Length: 241
Image (cartoon, rainbow, N blue to C red; front, side, top):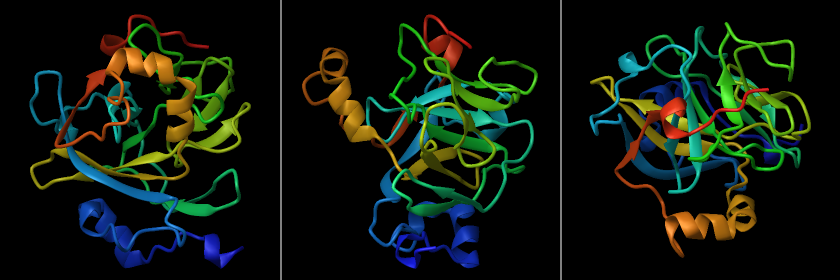
């Protein structure tokens, strides 16, 4: 293993991230700075504009919010069982990093970029081919449930294990949205962990994003708060493989 490309996380830092990762952004990073990116600390709010609490999240429901940019969707899920801890993952270029697990009282709450690592399929207002398949569901993409599936080309990601690729054409996993739970049970997004395709995404959908968000609105960083809504309310049609 190349130590220069390894994400260094001490046991102390791992404990801190579950409490307040926004306070330790200078300590948590890959040596080249590419795999942990702190962004604005943003409070997640429900459809009524009230602070979202972890206790309000329905088990295995698909939730959508936008972070860290106005046009980059993220998928939020309260899993049925706790997410795995200390999962070693690898980017397409071989850089390694560690996913520390879910948040919340049971460690079941996870969030990932909802932009497929294969060809950047993502949920839109018109349609979503990207979603979490609950443990009670089925998908032709693989013989497992409780996974994130892109129906466009059947890329499958492990929601409980840092978003790593299980099967399909994707060559790296989904970047995780680093979450923080406050003392009052409210939920915040503070950073992105793992290799993202945000710039490629902006280039690929430039005209579409411009029409939806204005000339420079798509790349605008989300600040202060982000609206969270169920996928079924966000999009007009869900296509599941």
